[in-house]
Image 1: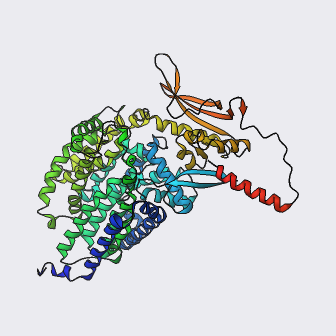
Image 2: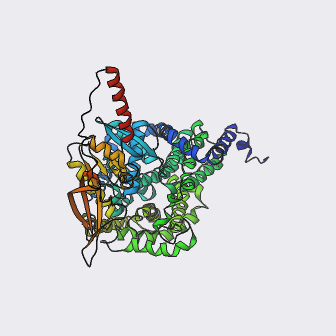
Length: 623
């Protein structure tokens, strides 16, 4: 502690305040708050924690970039690069249909953004109903997914009104932001043409197009990884409190995009400590000192994994007993190779990106080791890339140890996007060492040929997504929703969150035929909804052609259904929407209007009392 090198840090009271903030955040996040209280706390306060962090990030970003923005002139803009980014983003967006691609993730995120918009709570609605033209969320549950994406979607709802399509608008915008950041990274590492190469490589990646037109958080994750790395370079260059604040809060928000994105806090910490060591002093700002306290909701939300064993979804892979283990690695590696080099009809990959990335990675690893000894002489972008390189490696290793880490799986392959970002960064980083300008231009040409000859046909056909029946059924349901002139109907569907997120009353099958059956009878008898529809899937026997209801879709013989529309979305399935005409008990209809004539009291007070009692009962009966 008496070392002259450590004296400036030991004597800086702000360092001790930062350590106290970290200790307090650890105690509150991991020890002091019980499990169920933690969930309630995140539900009520999570939105405000993210909002405060986001506002501080934008403020710091403006403080560190405002001089550059003011100095910007139209004539100084690189319009060719802007055109490359615009063309690349357009290619990614025009060949895929906008829709919810990975249903469970994306619908849950949309539902959370809905509750954030309507009442600023963090809940996924599981009960909601149209009440005289106003849709009201009646009940919800805490979801395990981090909060930054639904928070941004909720801001779009706040500015433009609630629309499920706002998730697509957000991702469409992020697509161009991401390609802009890729272009900037390439420019800093290897020059202007290298920026175009990075854009071309990602424009030719069908998996990116698939996610750019969806409602998930993968694009935001890529944007925040690159933004944080570029802000690291800015902090290394500027070495002031504004740059530090923007950098740290970018990392804080990045950690709240995907579960594993918290990994990136490690390279962020090493960058800060390296700059402090070079400066011989602690560069700190008050927002950074208290930043750890703005992350306490993150570990509190993760208590869901302790409270709900099903949150790990181990049941989706029979035989899996633990989420992470080294014995998963060999099998996951073979699946990763199958994704990176599989046929275009089966995998939304880019052979050009995969080949260049696999060639560049070993050279990039050697370059990182070499530069660790000469960091003080390197450019800020190279230093930042050197520190972030292990982050890409750790994330890939973690996914290879994950029980469901098969990159060629139709649901899981989106998890390969950060790895492919690492591949592109590796290509851009090694170019100055091994290639001249002509080689870089040649790689751009090869990337364009790959894009036109393989990627565009693959994106246009999108055969790789046709086997994902839940996604196709979701699109089918949304077509039905769009065709209805009014939304005052109700749907019985085991995926009821989808309907509720579109402001349509819904309840699952198990509730409709069980505990909520009397309520459903009451609502139908009183014509509370213009119609009641039922969604079901039939599996077809290939030998006999016999149709059998999917497990969990059977309402039983007392529910009288009339087919409204049906379609074979896959060869051996039949997807059907039916109208619920009545509910019977043996030979008696329970939903027919009561034929008895009930006299209306003459006393107004008595009428008002009956009306209030009816409304209270009506609210209890809602799905």
